[in-house]
Image 1 (cartoon, rainbow, N blue to C red):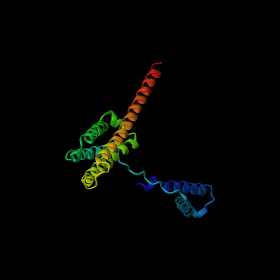
Image 2 (image 1 turned 120 degrees about the horizontal axis):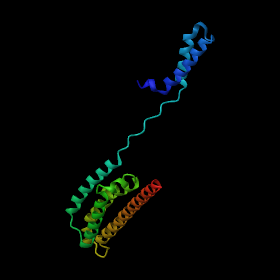
Image 3 (image 1 turned 30 degrees about the vertical axis):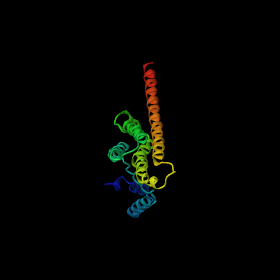
Image 4 (image 1 turned 90 degrees about the vertical axis):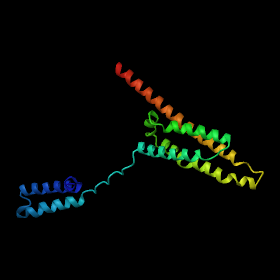
Length: 194
C-alpha cells in the first residue's frame, strides 16, 4: 500500500499516462504496451528517492519526568551525607530552587519549550551537584593528611553557590518568558476588542 503513494509509483504513472497519450495519438503503434510499460519503468527509475522519516525524539515533558526521578534519587543521596553548616545551607537553597524549577505547572509548560533550560537542569541534577558533593566526600579525609591546604568545604560551598546562581539565572529567564507571554496575550486581547 505504501508503494502506491510513493514517488516512484507517481512518477511512473505519470510517464505511463504519457505513453497512453502517445498510443491514442498513433505514435506508439502496435507496440503500445511496451511503450507504456517502458515509460512507467523509466519514470519510476528517475523519480527522486523517498525522504527518510523524521527521527522520533522524546517528548520534552517526558525528559523532565526523568530529571524529576533523578532529582529524587539525588535528594536521597545527599540526605545521607553529613555536610558542614555553610555548605549544607547552600545545598538546601539549591535543592529548594531546583525543586521549584522541576515542580509541575506553569514552569514546566515554559521549560519544555526551552531545550537549553532542560539541559541546564539535567546537567545540574545528574552531573554537577552529585559530582561536587562526591568530590567533597572523597577529598575530606585527605585534608587531614595535608594541613595548610584550602579546606574542601570552601570549594564545595563555592561550587554550590555557582550552581545556585546558574539556577537563579534560569528561573529569571523563565519568569521573563512568562511575562512576555502574558504581555503578548494582553495585546492580542486588546487588538481583538478594537
